[in-house]
Image 1 (cartoon, rainbow, N blue to C red):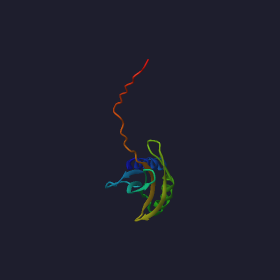
Image 2: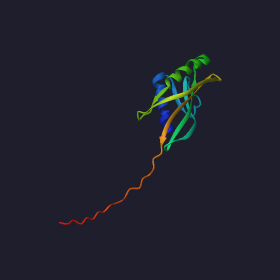
Image 3: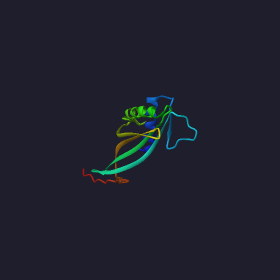
Image 4: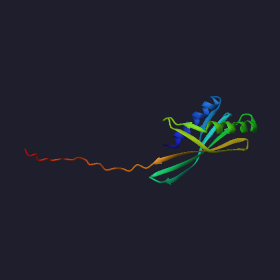
Amino acid sequence: MEINEIITAISIKLNQTFGDNYSNYIDDVPQGFQAPAFLIMFLSLENIRQIGNRWRVSTLFNVQYFPSNGRSDASNHSLKVQQALAEITLLNGTVMLGTGATSEIVDGIAHNMIHFNFYLQEVEAKDFMESLEQHSILKG
């Protein structure tokens, strides 16, 4: 699993929910962009060791909404963004649930923080025999 897979799934879900009238940007907004637009930013990753060579990975994303109609538009979209990102589907078909969603309006821009958590399993490398010869003596 890669972080870019989650970012792609977020972008697809935003496009499905809000349509083509919104631009989706990743990591940085270009100069001279047109609102309304979304900016998807990866903020943090936390690995927590679990029993049985497993890791619980918690990621945090900030999906910013740049409104075209001021603060009230940003406020209205915050709830819609949280509802849309409650569940995303990766390109491989894996469904991920968004958890711990919070929103805040700062300088007229909606900041929607949401966690996507998943588990990773460590796979131990196994040494296999290269060849096996068997000699049998039969009596008969």
